[in-house]
Image (cartoon, rainbow, N blue to C red):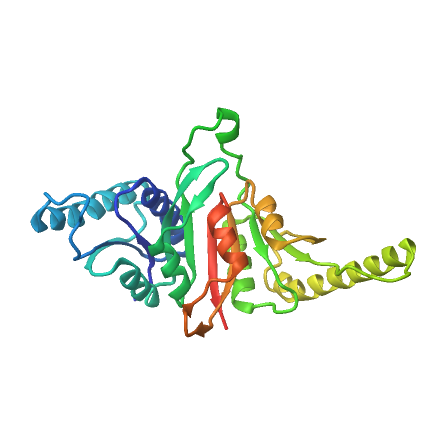
Length: 295
């Protein structure tokens, strides 16, 4: 049995967007799609009058109705539904272990306040051993129509790269996705030029900065070369500049089809960590974000 693309689904607008994204991905990967609805055994303090039988009915009917819509739109796609009772973050993380990909929804807050990655999604991203994609629903808020108008999507993949610690898992995921979807890939690498103190002239500083920039660009090209050879049909553009990775990635992500970032598999006594750059991208990027764990 091939491993499915699993999508966490609870009937919300965000999860509907995640189902739509996951269905197309499963179709292109020629994999089954699994809609997983998790309901917590803890009492629901917001709807205390809803009994366990009603909650169980919702947990069964909500994914079933969504699966029927997906089958109608993608008749060639195998769609399964599953219900689990337990802690949502733990259950989704376990489900990711036997999946090729886990997809979850994330709620938008507005044009200026960014997005909210809830505790469940954030915990799943931090603990999953498989790639996790967070998909946004349409923006809501009180900003002007011009501010909230959707940015036209060109479908390209934006890949954040640290040339000092390139990760094969992240690179392969990004290139394979671009190749599968027939879109371009934009590799973004940001670097910091340390301040210089002393009698150096402006010309000397500019020359040194130019030399460092050339070295950085060469390192980026070297990292990408074997993957461009592996995926020759993927058109690649390189963006190497002085700056900080978070604003540079967010700027590049406007209109992108997917942003790919990594998460190092490391544990501390305080638990799993996402990393500052990945954490910021998750909270502020309007495009779908794939977080790929790596050693």
